[in-house]
Image (cartoon, rainbow, N blue to C red; front, top):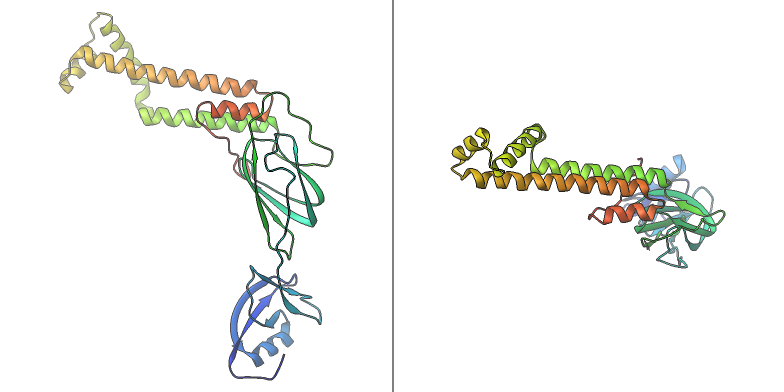
Length: 274
């Protein structure tokens, strides 16, 4: 390592895989002493993002630059169920993030199959190379979905799980819309009020609507019309919710599920762990 010096020099600490865990500056004699006592320290300037320690537990330890992992998918716009082939080093960790989040380990010629339409960020890590990141876009498809090739890495929890999550997304959306319109505790009263307002518009008297109109300083007929119009919006939302959830229930592919959500401006997303 060279002669001792009292001037601090750069050093790195590393684990048994050669990953740099800490950087700093220290006098060389202390670096030598720590290395002799427990190892895992090496003089030199480096960063974990760009360097690693070659032969980390052997006699030929040295800092090396991490080469970039260079990969190329056969397609960046695979159809649902169709493979996006990529050639990877042994034991490459593939982290997929998007509508579905999943991590797998694969090697060699890998057929990555994404079942749920959407945009995915695919990060591939093969130590000690620097990670490669690619973006894949899976379009919504119509008709039958092809079977994944034998041995393919299939990303997706299955149609039933996708249906269940999509129904949950739709139900929560319409529940939130209802609460934005009116707090839950008042919704039952609103139904009764809408009935009273409809009676008034039909020419019948309503003490309730007349009283509220007087309190608000409004014309009773105008107030009744506004109440009925708001009630109609609530009915429309509920009818739309039923249409969406039933379209999800009838869906025979993940694409049809996603299309049912997108038809009303919703996007499919399955959080990790669900």
